[in-house]
Image (spheres, rainbow, N blue to C red):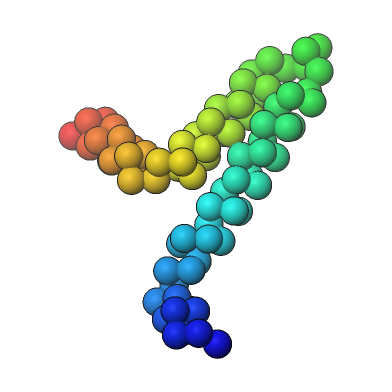
Length: 80
């Protein structure tokens, strides 16, 4: 085993750098496919919520620092 791999296993940087984006991308794709597969005759709000979930999780995958900052600012503005 290389030293970088051992260090990543100890510090958890491998989890943040590789595993989380893959899992989040799978979640985003699943939500988007589910939203697209719903027929138009079903509840439109359900389709809209799946699209919203896909977009929201996609933002956290593509720009996690910016998304965290925006959510923090929104929570601060809402709560006080």
